[in-house]
Image (cartoon, rainbow, N blue to C red):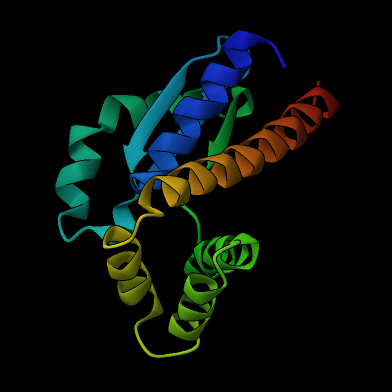
Length: 148
């Protein structure tokens, strides 16, 4: 993968992790980032603030590939995969137990934040997000070429 595409994938993945939807213009390599409105109480105010970007995306719809914030079940699967690959059996069991109980997202985060595996989790999650973006990017480019 070319270095510029790696940077694009990384930037989109980072923005998705922050709760933003991304739109990638496959012709210009432009990335437009807009907060996921469903996660906010000020949806109308945000739409007004991002009106120019939203209009650009609407006007050039065929050129943009949309990347949406992960659904909770997708994020949960990433947490499961992380726990599966753990080599520390005690911590692996602890994470698996957390994922089977109430409030798995909150408890997983709290446990990871208090552990020696915090950076390992961030690296793993970033890598998983980048794989998702790469796959979606390839699929999106193929779809765009079919529409020509």
